[in-house]
Amino acid sequence: MDVSKTLREIIAQEAKLREKKEACRLAAIETVNNLIAVFELKADELAFDGKLIPAVVQKAPKQAKKVQKVKPKYCAPDGTLWTGRGRMPVAIRTALDAGAKLEDFLIEKAE
Image (cartoon, rainbow, N blue to C red; front, top):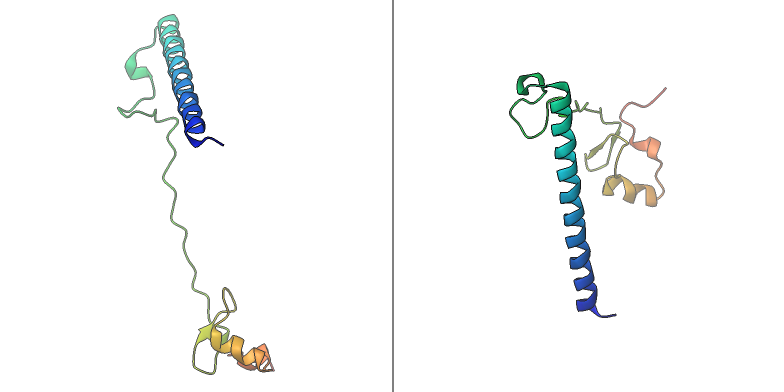
């Protein structure tokens, strides 16, 4: 496999795609200009707010998700707390491997 040949092919493909993109862009501009002329539209009637993307197309910023704190459910012999979610602490894993039960580490034991 000739790497330089493959690279040349990719560069040629990229050039063709750029030309195609520019042709589509020019066609879109022509279509928009024709529609503006046919419907006698004015700039203030269009949904542009001075930015590159029209306001109609712009998405609202995403709201940050509220992270809820989860109460620890287990306590390891060394005092490490674990909610039961995510990776198990090494201290609990070691104790389980030694024969302990997960229920032994419960903070609030059911009666």
